[in-house]
Length: 470
Figure 1 (cartoon, rainbow, N blue to C red):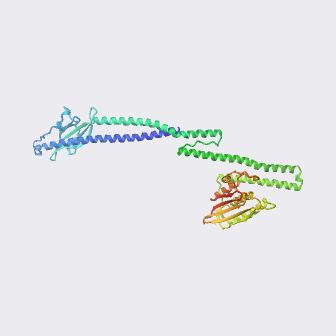
Figure 2 (spheres, one colour):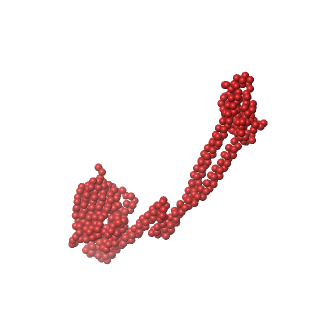
Figure 3 (cartoon, helix red, strand yellow):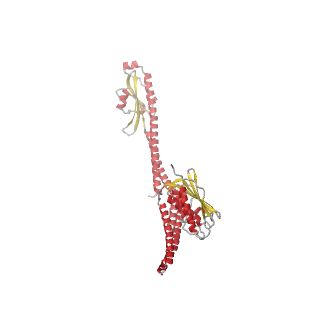
């Protein structure tokens, strides 16, 4: 069952229930009001007749003779009102002319209540099926009940009004439900039509495998508009990830091609007799070992990114960050000496130093800082310098790696932390994983990694880490 049909059925169902309850309340209230109006009229007329009888008769005469002087009942009656006076035994003493030879039905329950001195009212169904509303008020002389005044009115008009109202309510409910069902279906169709277009466009995108296409954004800022915007943002992210994966495949293939070619060439040299020459054999083995180390680092970086995607948890412990910075400083000097074996090299300096203890993984933090230093050495020409500083600012620790290198262009700066992103710089190779890994390590420690750079003046990476709680 489609959402459109379900929405229509729910709408019609709820509306039907509301109309039924409303109709029942209206019908009940109208029935009560009409019946109450009839009851008031009957009680007033019965009271008038009873008061006239009491006013025309002397109690002592009535008690002595047993006779009652009755007023003319037609004065109180109307074509719709029937009046009769009955004795205590139920026999009719007088009745209005509109009754003719008929009499109001004798109800023993009403008579029993009247003989106890209480008025009573009741709806009696006649043999003809007509409902008759009848009020019976006792006639008391002194403390003795000598009879009762009975006033009745057929409920034909009331029943006719109620019948017409019932038909009107039922017919109105049915017509309203039918119209509301059609309008609800049309409204749901109009409301869900943008979603149908989204589904069709998404299907075409999936069929064409073209993630560069986007859904048309509606002008209205409603739920559908926000859904389209979210879907477009998801497509854009998927497009970036897909392109990044393609770049990763190309970059990894490129990075692996060179070491594999080098290894294969040196193996061929060894097979052709270089293995017999100790010098040539040592050179070939060193070249093979260097390329194997390079591939190992690449595979390790890819594995770390995969673990980060899987939600790897770092094993944290108290880390004296100033001691860790000193270890990184010493290793950075070796890295500079290795990168610049001859001539002028990039100097490594220790800048501002504070003492700080954080909760973290020392190996990962060292990897982060060495990645930043390796990046600084890569883009800093000989004669420049790289400065490592540590600042302790209340609840935060700042570690900065500042270089005097070529800097990062403004258009490249927003993308340097993207995975697999590589700026096109002559003579610099890599797959664009180092800074992505560095930022992930920073965020895994509850911190952040920021960068400031000016082309031709240098770059400063700042690692922000929360201090350890006591």
